[in-house]
Image (cartoon, rainbow, N blue to C red; front, side, top):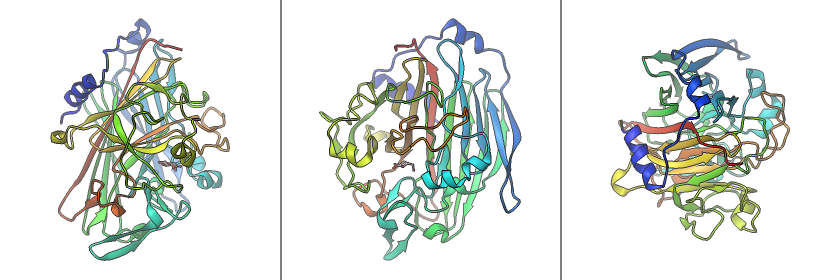
Length: 397
Ligand code: BGC
């Protein structure tokens, strides 16, 4: 697989520089053996046990994943001074992911999303002459797999460990007709934490009937540390020269619009908040950024990893780079967080206290013939890979 060569080759094309480690960070980076440990994460009302897998790499980066929804509940990384913080929004217990308040606001913190990431217009699509009706759980539209998407299902888990990597493979079988989708879909998602401070997410799925599939991961990051306030000062680079504008229900119109001279141009790193309040119909529809960006990709390099995004936290110097085999990324600036959910540190998650970068095929593709197809046929294997790479640079407050 081409993950390192893919990222560095493409990163050079978008102006990424080499990052130096501070002395403090270098110190924290030698000591431990990679490990994976299983912990209890509670029980579902029907008695099924929920587990959490605690992954650590040799540099001490650690990440917890629960079998409920494949949710990444925590991810701790060092900053430029070697200070550690949890950089993803979420909770440290199952009850908070299943509370009524959580269900009402439905932010999908850290979860695996399936069968279909983002929206399908009016919960309806026609495939091979048959019209399928899905749940409409977002106004008139279908969002993130429906009433009980993959984020609310119990996955089975198989941990693994070798000299340089630790991880866990999660499996979920979605029966024919679940949430209105055709076909029995067998899905495997593997989280790997590497010695190079990467989290690799590999998705595989097979079906026995043609069906749309668009899997993604819905972590909300705050690289200054979860619960530390707004993300609007984070600087974002998106390797996209177009985005898919939406209607007022956030369904793409079908257009691929050039980002040039719009608040959607992140080809040069720009603070998320710099233009978020601009007088712009698209920003008004999303109450901020909630849009699919079309990644720049060499046509011959289809399915290879491209650098999709690079985010820098000015105060801590943390940097997150995201590479993917997907054609798009949904940049969501946490606009619908409203302070009603209280996070791991006891702090309210206010509007824009986290951002998500969901690598994906484009929203509503089953109804958009010109978008890359999301239909998986029997006999084919759905395969997708996304890599998050964590590093630091000199803080630039
Ligand atoms: C969607 C948002 C939605 C959020 C949480 C994002 O992927 O684009 O519109 O509010 O997920 O559900």
